Length: 352
Ligand SMILES: NC(=O)c1ccc[n+]([C@@H]2O[C@H](COP(=O)([O-])OP(=O)(O)OC[C@H]3O[C@@H](n4cnc5c(N)ncnc54)[C@H](OP(=O)(O)O)[C@@H]3O)[C@@H](O)[C@H]2O)c1
Picture (tube, rainbow, N blue to C red):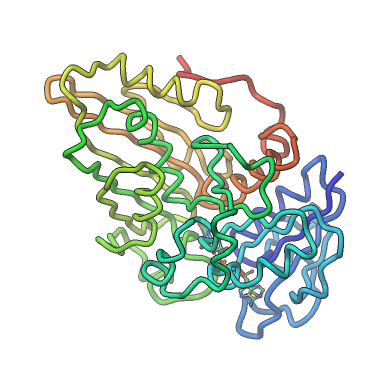
């Protein structure tokens, strides 16, 4: 049995993660923290019940949430999960490693081995660049190597997970034209911006519109994962949670529909949390909401060598909290889907 802590349990991602960990069959002890700041999520000067932040968890999660300090963490933790701002995660990790076997960061604080990415993309100099080289990237379906031994895990971003899982099989199989950058047009629900109040995510302001055009922080992460340039345009949609990514690109001459299906099956035939819908069947946000799945469907126009791929996931789960539980499970030798599915599902492949 394991002892874990969550920093940022009062935020959207941390609250989802807390509910998963509270129900996880191998977790015996769960410490929860908020910032303790008066300008944080509110009504929490001190120790408060978890349901203060997640009312639907009343009577389901018994733990309280306390103001964070390193001293308040138990001494012999197995894992600390960071659902905190990037810069804070990057700063806190060394102190947390004195208390826990592994730090599992859901921010971007440890997603890049190259420290130069941080000032360029995240506008801060990484305070602990020595930890970047040893951090293991947390997107198990792309590469689970090293997770079983990691001290620091930098979980993949939400748009990044949807985009990478959709494109990686075709890139890895060498099916795509190298002179054409895939175009990724993705829409996220408002929870992607976090819980803090802001004008552009307030009820009357949210519509359906692009943002971060040509400079969104997830573009470098997607390109790192795939090893190819992409054109990535995120959109904010007027729904609470979920991401739908629509991706357009061209294959090399001679590529067939069977090659495409074969590449997806090869990549995800053994992966229970990626549901391949197949050609001509398209995912929808509603079908992945509140689930740990990424759904992928596609269409191939052989005459024009054009392939369109569609992926959907819940940004708070497969895009964050449930992905971090996958990483935790793999780190400690547990079945990857423990605590995420009612039973461990068999390998999927294209579901007829
Ligand atoms: N939202 C998504 O879809 C998503 C997806 C993937 C990754 N992420 C990443 O996950 C992290 C959390 O995102 P979120 O959407 O959950 O944000 P959020 O709702 O704004 O929550 C942020 C959390 O961090 C805590 N926090 C802030 N400053 C702190 C401090 N100095 N000490 C301790 N705790 C502190 C906050 O506590 P208070 O409530 O007390 O302020 C809150 O619990 C971010 O790094 C984000 O980029 C988010």
